[in-house]
Image (tube, rainbow, N blue to C red; front, side):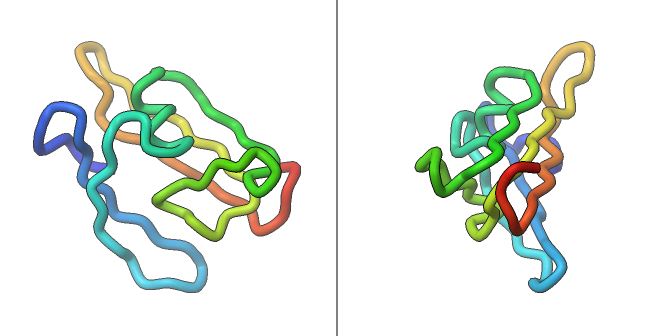
Length: 88
């Protein structure tokens, strides 16, 4: 994730093993990745289909960890790692 363009918006580059990098604008609170940014804490979802959540960065993920990148004065972005199966 990169520095925000507007307050509460982050320019994101996302990719996985099977897709080319794609650019997004992620807002605070959008899915687990956005929640990690807005809450400033690690968000773990072991079973996305069961939870009913969907992450806009990794829509096909079955499970994920989203860790905010936090500095002294602000949150700079998020690193999100997903798994193709549940129960990371």
